[in-house]
Amino acid sequence: MRADWRAVATAQLVDALVSRADRATRDHWTRYLKGHAVFRGVPMAGVRRAVTAVWADQGLAGRDTDAVLGLAAEWMEAATTEDKLAGVLLIAEHRAPRLADRHATALADPLARGALADWNVVDW
Image (cartoon, rainbow, N blue to C red; front, side, top):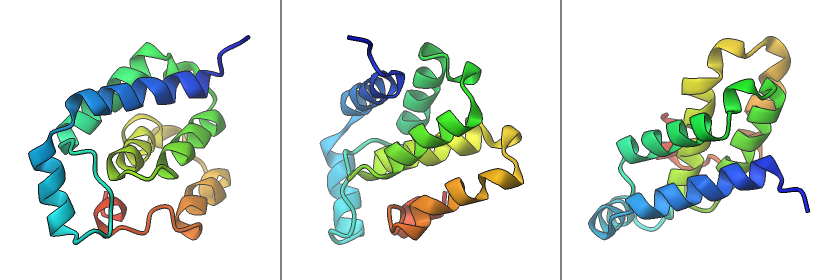
């Protein structure tokens, strides 16, 4: 059975985030946002390192922009804030220079579906 590259990339991301999670950080953000978001407890620097590792290890630079946007959208649909932030960072820090007007719908879809309804994710 051929492994789907997106599933492999997502599994690596989740493993990296879980390994960086800190209970005190999770509890702080959960209290701060009063239960309106679900956190793993990974500081932004840890999310950024996880995304950068997946980018390099999975050869995402060689993937088509539409495919990378699809992966980012999957991450943004996750229940946890850090996964959503990973999707945002994947686009903003690794794919933004390749974006074109034709990508506007793909970029707007997670917002339209409510996947990015938390202010702390949208701010990024």
